[in-house]
Length: 137
Image 1 (cartoon, rainbow, N blue to C red):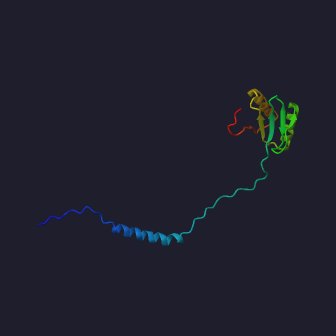
Image 2: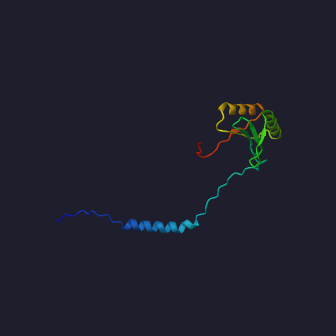
């Protein structure tokens, strides 16, 4: 009796047939699928736009300047006038933000004194203005 030889090949024709049938099914059904809709919650209208920050400038000679908006020019003020202007701005808008722009050569304590004076005047929103980039002098 003859011995059968083992076949060491895989017949891939049935696999290719199945893949082609699946491809045709997906090509026919894909255009029929409706895209889902997402119900996104809506937000209410904003009562007022956020106020633009008032900039308190501290010059290298420890003199103060005040800029009421980014487009306005800085005007020199004394420490007493600065506190009066801060109180007037807070009377109009208690949530008025402030920025402190101090020269980099100033001592740290001078900047802290300005922050403490602003806090004593009632400021709750105050930040330090920084310069972007890597400009070192």
